[in-house]
Length: 353
Ligand code: NAD
Ligand code: DAU
Image 1 (cartoon, rainbow, N blue to C red):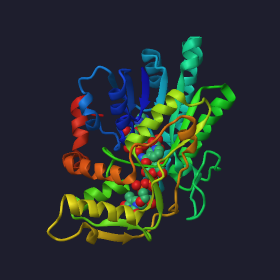
Image 2: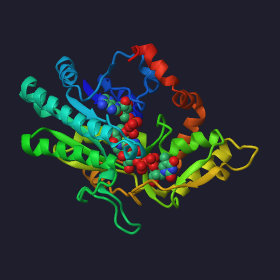
Image 3: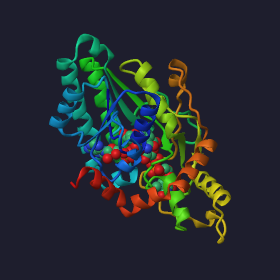
Image 4: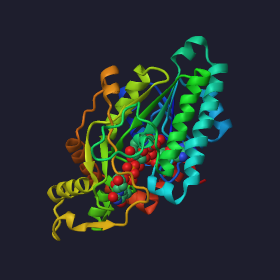
């Protein structure tokens, strides 16, 4: 049994689906179902006894402790977070509450469980895997080398500052208490079930609705893109083979600037779903820049690839084709998210809150 937090979000739900495809080990999925949590993502597991969904907050000490006692997981994979940079600029409080205090609560509950409820053998097998981001390293110029695990932390947004704080707490629990943690720092993910506030799903859904495709600033900011399935396989690999107390960068060497990403999506849509009014690229609209917008992220995942043997399956070209196809095939999913109907679906399954 493993405990996953945030398993109804974008990466968490992909992880739970992949996990139960790859193994028969059950998952307890603790998720508060914020705006970003969507149980429709996990609809295929509705009657699957290996998936136990619990609606609840990672900041709730009693709940977290009782789940640990009840299910006795051998590992915790911690995804739950507020994840969107733009939202953190408008309302940072919740980011610190969830990402910092929520992680602290999980660490405290998990350490008490580890110390008091596990046998020696169970303790030596136990892992707490903290899922983090490359944004903690700050921003690169166009010609600096990619982030390694040795790059100093220089978070620039309220989101990345909150994630950096949680990474430091995780590190301290290892150094101070010998608590068996692992941390992954991954670059930008894309793929199925990503909430259409993030660049790639926003552009696909706006293009299909013939709405403007907003490009912040000059469109030359660079991100390093990884298909979500490859992030999930990296987490499984680190969970099974990672060295306790270590951090691992996750990325697939797919740096692209934003305008290139948006033009690529438009070209794929022109091919797959041509529109009588002409190219989707005509919808591109330059807008005011994000405050404090990091210029470039690039991740060096040599450590993960050489020490643990992980390799991504997708390059950007294959991953983005799959992703555009998925959004074309799942326009109802996007509509339900945009209209808020996904919340009604959840309420039908789990009651109102
Ligand atoms: P997401 O916003 O899509 O999902 C977050 C999930 O956490 C949601 O299901 C939400 O309901 C849940 N959640 C939020 N607050 C909670 C709380 N207090 N208690 C319980 N559940 C709560 O996020 P995502 O993009 O899937 O990211 C998952 C993790 O991966 C985050 O920790 C993020 O920092 C990290 N990460 C994301 C990316 C990316 O590109 N999206 C890249 C690297 C790392
Ligand atoms: O690097 C990993 C991080 O990637 C994760 O930790 C975060 O959780 C995740 O949200 C993501 O952060 P970004 O800020 O890089 O992702 P976002 O999709 O918001 O933006 C990607 C780039 O596109 C960024 O340079 C801002 C730009 N952008 C974004 C939006 C939403 C636009 O130009 N227009 C837009 O409308």
